[in-house]
Length: 219
Image 1 (cartoon, rainbow, N blue to C red):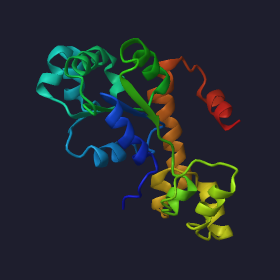
Image 2: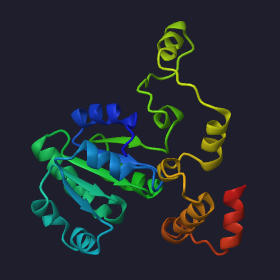
Image 3: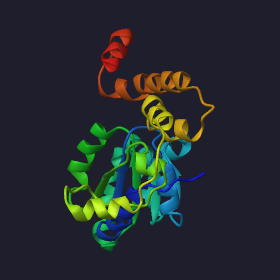
């Protein structure tokens, strides 16, 4: 089951403005699902694939000759050396919507983007489901404290029970947890935190005491 994300309309605008579009955000919020659905005609490359990652790191000059745009590169943070070649192709062809990129390690990504693709890249941030998305409400105007906003918003109001609201608060906004009621939230978040410590946090800084780090996260 696919639930439409409100970022889709912004993604469409960005793809017409920039040669490359980067969607960042935490793991498992739906970045890959969103981009694969939006850019369904683009070549898909996941750098979680060891062979694709090896080609991207070892042969960046020919990587986009073998994978011609439009192309979607998933987990681009693993091969930051591709950014200069993306810049070259965008500058040479002056095209729009040539590259779709996703990445979970935002701090690392922003450093490389600032050095290579400033002004050529649209950057969007995807989080978990909003309550509107969870209820599949299409209304997506930014909040303004004016009568026109409340009138338009009122047309698409959907009731929510106390139990449903508490479930959303308690289980969080991760798509997998909200779409699969039989998933155990404790197992999910335990695995999620472990993944962050082992894959992401250790690439940014040295965590000497995992117990203290988890205590910090809880706080």
